[in-house]
Length: 109
Image (cartoon, rainbow, N blue to C red; front, top):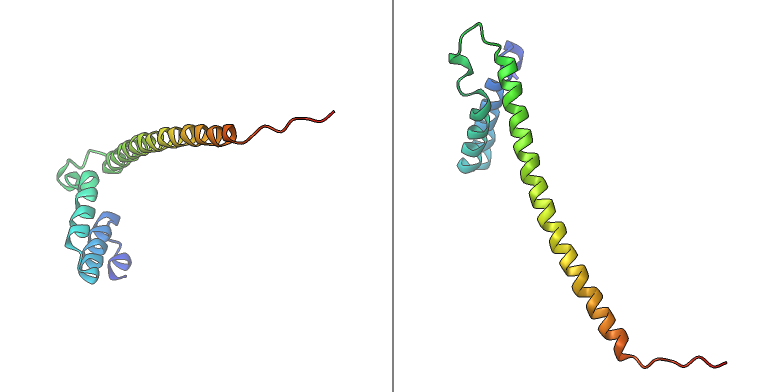
């Protein structure tokens, strides 16, 4: 809360929050993974020229991360869907086999 009240940059607050969560959960790997993710967006912005629009750079990086995530998710969902189609085909074949085992009733006219 102190950092919020002081008006610190959002990325600074995010790094602090990651450290706090890592400490409280005793999960250093999670903390490091989160830090690396934030580094992809914010790592070198503080060193860049004041003439550079850091907000635009960060927004572009976040957009690229979202695009990469969407691509990865799209591939995963496509793999899952193809697997479910194979399962559906196998189940349809099994159902046809069971139906073929039953004697056909003759229609009485």
